[in-house]
Amino acid sequence: MTPPIDEGVRTALIAFQRAEASDAVVYRRMARHERHDPHRAIFNRIAEDELAHYDVLKRYTGVDVPPSRLKVCWYTLLLYLLGYTFVLRLMEKSEDRTAAAYGARAAAISETEMIIAHEQEHESALAGILDEERLHYVGSVVLGLSDALVELTGAIAGLTFALANARIVALAGIITGIAATLSMAASNYLAKRAEGDSHALRASLYTGMAYLVTVAILVTPYLLVPPEHYQLAFVIMLGSVVVVIAAFNYYLSVAEREPFFSRFGHMTAISLSVAAISFVIGLAARALLGVDL
Image (cartoon, rainbow, N blue to C red; front, side, top):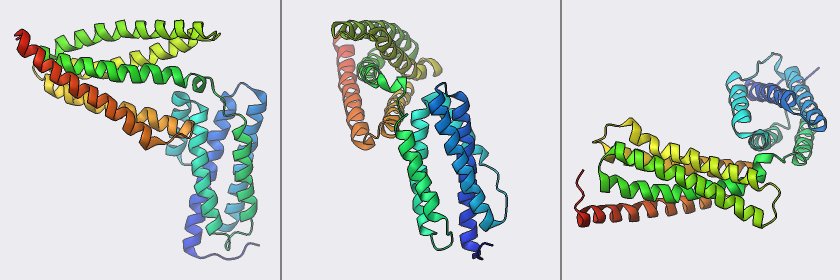
C-alpha cells in the first residue's frame, strides 16, 4: 500500500504521469518507423520503461491519465519534418527536467531512484543511435543556406529600391536564385569530388535544396503584395531572413548541441549587414543611372 500524499504533490505526479504516457506513445511511433532492428528494440524498451513509470505513479495518484494529444502530435510532426535525432534531443532535454523534478519529489516517491536510473539509461542507450543521414550533410546545408541568405538578401535589397516594383524584383530574384542554386550545387559537387568524397552528388543536392528553399522564402513576399508596395515586401523579407536563421540555428542547437545565440547573432549580423550595404548601392545606382520604373 502506498503512503498518503498531499494534494499538491498528487497534482505534480499526475503531470509526470501524463508526460510518461505521452513519451511512451512517441517512442512506440519511432519504433514503428525505424528500419534497424537493434534501434527498434531500444525504442520499444524505452517505451516499456515509460509505461512502467506510469504504473508506479498511478499507484500514488490512483487515477488513469491519457497521453497529451498535443505533445504526441507535435513530436510526431517534428519526427517527419526534422528526423528522430532532433526529436530525441528535444525529449532528452525534457527527460533531464523530469529527472530533476523527480528528485525534488524524492520524499513522496520511494521509487524515485529507480525512475531516475532508467532515465539515465535511456540517455546512454540513445547516444549510440543518434546518427542520422541528414546530419552527415549539415555542412552542405549550412553552405547552401548561408550563401543564399547572404547573397540573395543582398541582391534583393539592392533590386528592391533600384527597381521599386515588387513583381519585377520577384522576377529578378527568381531568375537570380535559380541560377545561383544550380551554380552553388555544381560548385559543391566539384569541390567534394576533388576531395574524393564518394557522396559528392548527395552533398550537392542538400546544398541545392537548402539554397532553393531559401530563395522561395525570400521571394514569396514580393509575389504576395501589390507591385507598388515593394517596401512592405522588403520588410517582410527581412523578417523572413531572421526567422529562417533562428529556425535553422535552433535545429542545430538541439540536434548537435551547438550554442544557439552566438551562431544566430553571427549569421543575422552578416545577412542584415549585406542587405544594408546593398540597399545603399541600389539607391545610388538608381540615382546615378536615372532608372525610374
